[in-house]
Length: 349
Image 1 (spheres, rainbow, N blue to C red):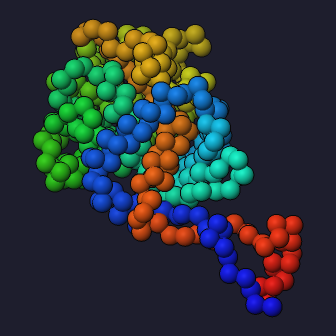
Image 2 (image 1 turned 90 degrees about the vertical axis):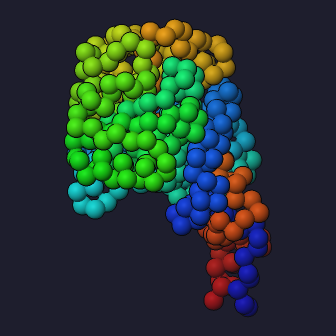
Image 3 (image 1 turned 60 degrees about the horizontal axis):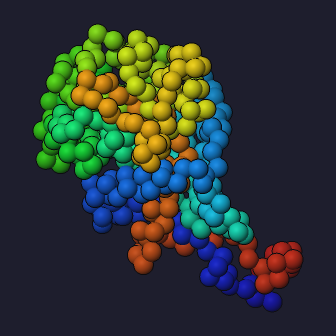
């Protein structure tokens, strides 16, 4: 008996790296960053609706591999992601990822997507969302300390959402700074390449730290940080990895995504368990204050959380409707009789 052709319901959309890049260019990178920011904000506004657990890590001497799951009761999503800081020396990406959405009602996947690019986009969008509520009003200059794969996305998201037009760059590797300078100037942004972190943060209203080394580090010391700035700390994102001196945290009002995860992975792992933090979703919903005055130091201690990935995947699923920016992937067995999986195999001879 000839094999039965898979029915339409057996296929799920798969967004490859190539198609993700096509989608970015179709929408426009800054338009997409702005739309992702709004999509993440919409899900933060319904934060209590989601299942929330710290991500599930598998640590090694070389790095970490993690699963990041969540569900809003209708859609389930997860992301697989790694973080291997030494990969760049081997010509490999520090971070790679893919993600999946599934229908809670029947468990069937409804989207599979690359998330190496999408993680960079959603991380930048989350940073911009925090800055929307926490950065000084009218901020125009940002410093980016650590000019690796995330730097350009961070700068462009801040321009799209907050209005930044000047970026000051510093990295211990001058080649990384030159790469970021070249890319951002091609996007029409004013860029200053600096030879120290201190020079980069002078005059900046927003300071983003996004270094990659898996170690306790002091990228910013207390004397470097003046009143009124917003610090966007995204490099410290696992146990044993930080970027800020603890004295900065003592002066700052700190905002986080999900405290049980951030206390393990974020800058606040350096502090006592009762160190006070405010959840960003509460600020967005008006349940807690954000920036209160011009002299306040605000710190977004961002480690990345599964709801942000869920938002990004849901955004992509909506955006590919009616386009050819995906492939149909046959990964779900679909026998004519759901009880006769063996018969389906036999008929495929």
